[in-house]
Amino acid sequence: MLAAAFELARPMLFALPPEHAHELTLRTLEAGIYPRAHAHDDARLGSRVWGLDFANPLGVAAGFDKDARVIDPLLGMGFGFAEVGTVTPRPQQGNPPPRVFRLIEDRALINRLGFNSAGHAAAFARLKVRTRSGIVGVNIGANKDAADRVADYVAGVHCFYDVASYFMINVSSPNTPGLRDLQAPAALDALLERVMAARGELMAAGRPRRPILIKLAPDLAEPDLDPILAVLKARGIDGIATSNSTVARNGLSAVELAREVGGVSGRPLFHRSTVLMARIYQATQGRIPLIGIGGIESGATAIAKIEAGATLLQLYTGLVFEGPGLIVRLKRALIEYLDHRKLTNLGQARGRRAEEWAARPLVP
Image: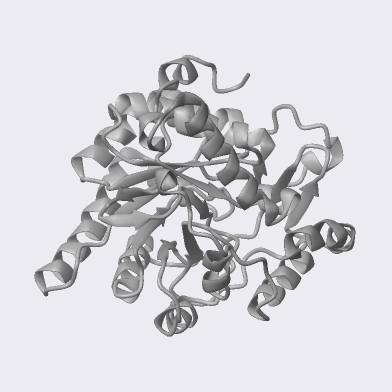
């Protein structure tokens, strides 16, 4: 009923500026108005990754709930996990508005939010008093004016260690000047050395092990991928998310809006992010769990991500255009896929077309 109500509300939401519509959505969720997932997920959709039991592979990507305002409602809607952030140590406003743009024909968004965040303390306070169980990742970043950006990531690990199911290191947003420089192999190695050391200190003090993942940009130069993966493997990264938004503008039909500065997410990101993920899957021989992000808006796109190498999936822009009913449709499509192929779990489909996807050009 409430999922159908989104279809009626969509024209009103799309009449609002994107950030205003998003704030209205958050307030609606905070008020407890959202479609509940009443049935348990089909066991075939479940998996155990990093010692965590995921009821299904669908997660909410960072950016939807930056300050941990609606984590429990999102899990209540039927997501298998949700990710908070990106969170910075100190509150910051981000870039001046307007800074989010809908490309309706392209089923895409452009954003240049710039890590707008209420800060560590605000997000931690909400996560500490959560009322339901569920897998919650914390996506950590650095303040724009940080003197030592790596210290900001270390601070995130220390702050959220007791309330995070896992950490996602965001060094791939295109909207904070210089942030993507942290993906360069030497800088990345230095960052991970300190982040992993912080986790090691906490574990030595008797705290449980928290998985540490990294989110990569889809705009990496092809020769840079192998050196980056060498660092990630050497530092023992637990997972890789592919990918953040892209600065490329290939194939966009909204010519005027395409000139806006920022990262593109949604349908135009699907091909590039899926090819990159398949290449990572092959380069790591499928030994590092991957989260597929970018353009998941249908059962076919979700299945393609899994066949290209994804263990888990994350959505955001697809929800903007498809509404909460997308969650049910994706689960149904995944179950039908398993039935059709007579598979007992999604892990049996993971990477079955990775070689094919990896051979494709990044730009179709």
